[in-house]
Image 1 (tube, rainbow over the protein chains, first blue to last red):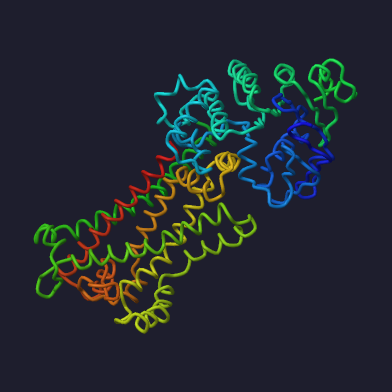
Image 2 (tube, each protein chain N blue to C red):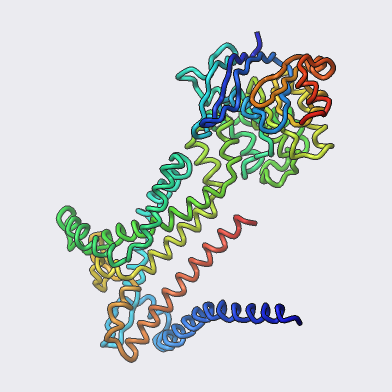
Length: 250
Length: 285
């Protein structure tokens, strides 16, 4: 059984149905890519996995999402703990307008960690995991907004890693970055998957092919096909997937 | 030059004149007040003017200290009441209320700013002053009553500017914080407030300017006695009240002394506005 088990998930923004009976299983410590044209529901799907869609007024969700066997849509679920466990990296890097130190340790403070040694250790370890420690260890007081886009995105990932998540959700994490930076973030993802389960939404099919182990193709709120990346890109079983990945559509 | 271009430049000049005439009013007021007010300050000495306790215009004694302290006290009191309420309200509207509720409440708060100050004063005289007199003692006309009424009067300023600056914080900050498992309140306190800090400070300073400058409501409920209040229940006279109460019958040096009061007020408010402008500009940079 996968670390994330989704069955028959439908999602509505008011009357608009954004997801239609999605069922899939995501494996632990693999990278799963979700591809599809804009507005196909892939970002909505990603955000159902840590219930960020709860912030949208008038949204409603049916079906079941199990994470580590726990139904995250049942009553009484600890949302704060869920979001600690399932971190989200946004499309545009969104470090807080605070110092680098405050950004990385934000999650720790939020979750009540006060021990200075623990904070120092996690700070170093999370910045090391995203390969920022060497560059930034002497300028932790700098405002995070003064970093480059790539550094900011790494910092956002470090901010998640600091609270020891299990799953990293990435919503087009490279769309605001140039090619060179994209490549470096992809390298980082390959390293992170040794410890974390990564689900990435991407517009960029080459990126999905390059980094992911599994790929799902969304179209109009429906999960058309899901399988190993090599299979999806070489021998798709559904005609619509084939049209999309060969560039005839999308 | 074609006919159209000529027309364009004529319109440009006409608009320029209109725009400058608005600014020129400011210049005229400034020059006039300073010209009328400063000679007497120079004559009796600025220090004596500001720090003397006695205001007896008939005996050529022009000490503004009780009024300066009075103004500071009611303004401070207004902030003590208005700032926590105002910020709480702004946070509720931006972070905790539904969009629909915000659309109802925010215009109503802005409507508060449109109520004439004499109406606030009237409410104070009819409701608040008797209430204070009966429950806490003293004459009722007091620092406390003025602080409460002024605190309410500065709410719209504080709330609307704070709401605007909280709304101007990119939603990505809020989402990023929530996505890390922070509560709404943690998000507000640790991300939204620091991000909107300069706008919030500006709102407080502008509210302060409003409180210092308010005249009518304060005259009606402050009691206007020329003495430094010994408690919150004592009557008080502010700089603005001093001018408004005596201008009608003042002449000669007395009249000049009132203008000097105006100069002091003017300087205080200019300083506050400058601080507000500088802090809110820093946000954009």
